[in-house]
Length: 420
Length: 111
Image (tube, rainbow over all chains, first blue to last red; front, side, top):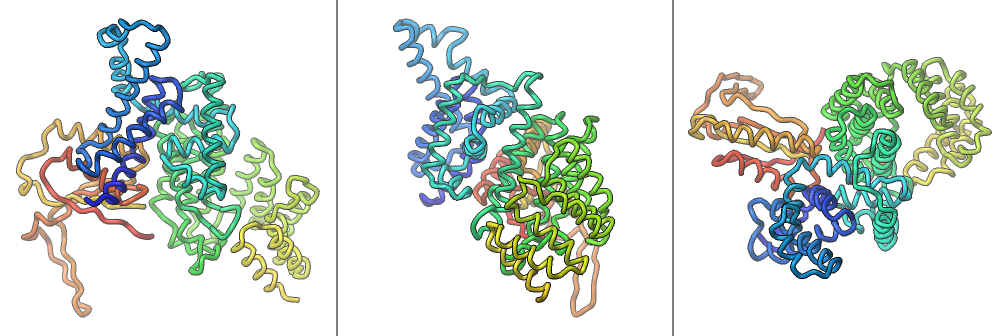
């Protein structure tokens, strides 16, 4: 293997193993920042040694063992500094609670719970949303700060600083490395789900620039969701979110046209929808259903996505059911954006006038000022009602508001199609 | 990125029937890949198979088995990973458990 080949192999091993290594180490050293440092040290050793010695047979175990030795050295040093007793070193080596024994116990244990703890701590509400996203991608996705920076179109030092501050905050507030107790569980879990879905959405509909899709983020979010579903199988909302992401991702090939332009859902070639992902999405919804819990917001959104996936053509979409699901969603999490989606569904199920009636009620909604989808939805409904003049100006207004260049082009084309 | 990891050969060609220990290790490996969100589908294929060929519009269907049983794909795992190197790494782990044998790693495009 050439040196670049070895480096790519090391990178792959790192991405597969780093989260587990960091999670296992955090349990010992009780500080994610220190744990990541130790894991990084092991990676540096690998980068030095493997190009010469070759990649070992079990590189994951090798990295784990190396990081473990570093952790032992560190614990020993800290202990020595704390107590200033030389002989303690001996006790550490022979005693029941020697760092070796502790670490072996931790690492031999089911690492699943540690991974779950790592997810919870990376998404802790004490951190800002940006910090949670950056820390999660870094610790659980194994992404570099540079990759995170490029994905979110922010300078690398900004991301690096977010991560450093986040780690410091967790240490300062002495946030425990734990699966939250029952009383906090629901709120903490929703913080994790929020981060995962935010990452997915950032990849799915880039809010700025020419980049219509950033597949790495979508795939990372999907992967995190799938991992979470195995770690917390009794949580219906986890399965709901996985269903939602699997089904949305199933459309990724169909939602972009030959020259990179976005293709709206109803105009997509459904033959290009990925049946495997759709099936996985349905399976996730069934798993949510099996928990017997009432439908939460992610399960409802997954169910809406499933309505589209189920229809073999746009005409066969069960819009009445979608409108009902949006109504249920609006009751759980009242939001003008959900109402806007319900307006679309009503317009499809019961005619454009019905949809417009609800959409018009949203015009005074302050949170929708500047939201391009409101004029865009109204434009569609107005066009269907034959009110082309109004439709055109609404399309133009939507085009002026969107931050996505390709979407803007699409909206302007529609405005032009309304004629003068 | 999706990759299809394929194992080749029939039971006769690999010699020994799979031992219990290997099956346990393999079970663990499959569970681990599922938990890591990597494994999308896996299965075994009947090495005998049916051969189908279109030659100038004439379709011939022939029942197996065929002479080149060693070359037949007998098992597959469809995985979702971030790079070719990850696919290779996971495939190495698979073969460390299985022992002697051979297979192929192919990227899957589409749908």
